[in-house]
Amino acid sequence: MSERTWLITGASRGLGRALAETVLEAGDRVVATARDAGSLDDLTAEHGDRLLARDLDVTDRDAVFAVTNQVAAETGRIDVLVANAGYGLAGGVEEVTEDEARRQVEVNLFGALWSMQAVLPTMRAQRRGHILPISSIGGVGAFPNTGLYHATKWGLEGMAESLAQEVGPFDVKVTIVEPGPFRTDWNGGSMVRATPMHAYDDVLGPRRQAMDGSQAFTQPGDPRRAGEAMIRVVSSDDPPRRLLLGEFAADLAPTLWQGRIDEAARWRDVSVGADFPAGER
Image (cartoon, rainbow, N blue to C red; front, side, top):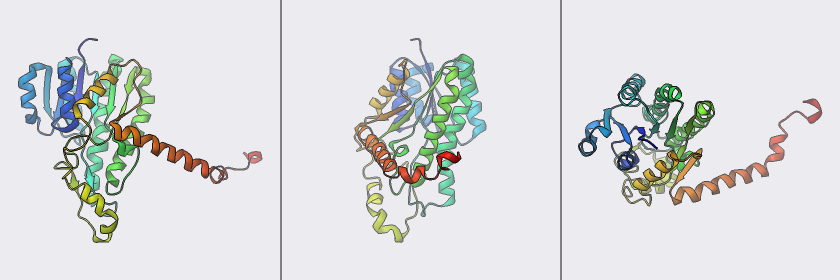
């Protein structure tokens, strides 16, 4: 098809950066946003006006709308939004502070919400578009020491599930992307870590050690191949509602789903017993 315009938030590094590079190499145009768009100067020099880099803090709703409206006017359309901006917060649910919890939600959940709201008038008007909220295998299952991170990803998935049903009649598609561990600094320098409570040393000690940054850039997932997978989804006439990325996620998710199905079956009699008896409904 003709050249598409992608809007990618959080494009300075990690999956966002790799996706921007892959999309540009595939021949499409990219609007890449980051808190410091100067980190994208090398891509701008290489790709010229096919890359528009913009400073953007996704927690600033007015700024998200202003930047989105500006680039829509400049490019004439926005075909794909990748709501990628986000970060990890390590810490037990009792350990995180109010400020840490609120910041996590502001960036990971509200940042995605503002981005999606901002592109929808353009996508509805052109009656075409594809939104890819970047969730995680942590939006399918949950693990200790990342409870607030999971809260944002589970919230993002529910919001995107509703959105898909609301915008489908406008020919706008939604695919929730659920990566496993990819070779980035997600658990390195980009992660915020709550102050540990000694009461949880035995419970969370192994997870704290696994997330101490030493495993950054050693994960099995290839960010560029993740970008290629997303391009393939956007190019499909029948894209999935959810896209698991990487073998870890692809293998773990069905196990988690089956566990829930089995548990629901074991407790079905208790569940249905909460209704009025059949003759009284």
